[in-house]
Length: 400
Ligand SMILES: *Cc1c(COP(=O)(O)O)cnc(C)c1O
Image (cartoon, rainbow, N blue to C red; front, side, top):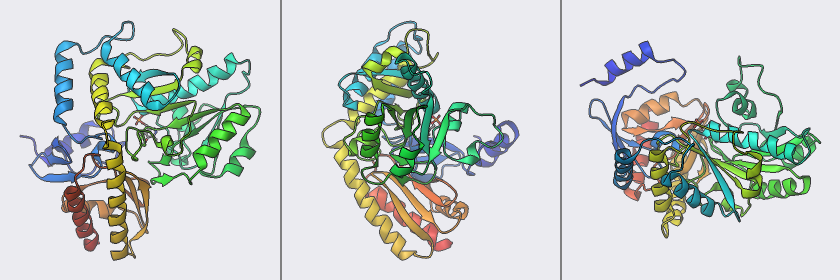
């Protein structure tokens, strides 16, 4: 059997070096745990990149995927499939929109692309072709395609890829005044994450989404919410914007929608959907039967009575426990942030060595920006597993 070093050597030789991968080759997973190629067990506090919301290889999801694999793998969007319409119906209902329309794709960036294209077409159809600009926020992350890189508010993701598509403006996150000042007759939409995940797990100030929603209403703008990291129960509500009781024009999903199988979705109000008529947009694999069948089961499980409340409760226990750790290591930890089971622990220094000591202590995590450790474990994490992870984390910190 291939061991960690031989897999890593091949990675070094044959893969593009666009990631600084941690020196672990993962072989299998079960619930909140993963095993590497040499049989070492780790508690996985990241679940992919916040993708395995219900833990690794959830038995019910494995069953659904197997059944669908034996039935039909792919049908394309030239035909109808039941898993796709079922998931669409569930997402439409969970959105709280009076009537919603869903577009399926394969990743977060594609879901955001669909929202951006929708925003431009909606304004064209309303007779305002000059309205094509999208305002997003400094520190945001919206994907790696050229348009979503242009929408992303971090220079490091843009360098060397210019010229980028035009029509993207950035203002400080949480600053309503700056946003208002940036709106012009060209503005089409505002694109926002309820919590900026990639750049450090930064929450919008309370009331910010509500203020954005009101501003969009008054100024005739679309409000586009990127729920790729915050959606599907991660923050203790099904969708991040539901904490503030707002209804955006559209939102995007991906990461944990199918518990780690590739999928993306754009959900919009039904009356906007006419702006993307037949032929205007598409995806070969989008709405794949296996991915949507699993997504459907994920949504069913998460919307069971009490599930989201339990995520919120565990998130609070996690928060208190992290604050305790901060008190024990005040010279290391600057701030503990996040909501539900999405946490950012900001250090006073880069976290490479911290993550290495975490691995030694059998705990896996990934960064969110240079100085922040990100935790986004399985939403089914048990309290004893949470404590086990925190003991490992503190063991790692005591090695620093
Ligand atoms: C991960 C992420 C994306 C990009 O998703 P991909 O599936 O990698 O294309 C976009 N927005 C947010 C908020 C994300 O967390």
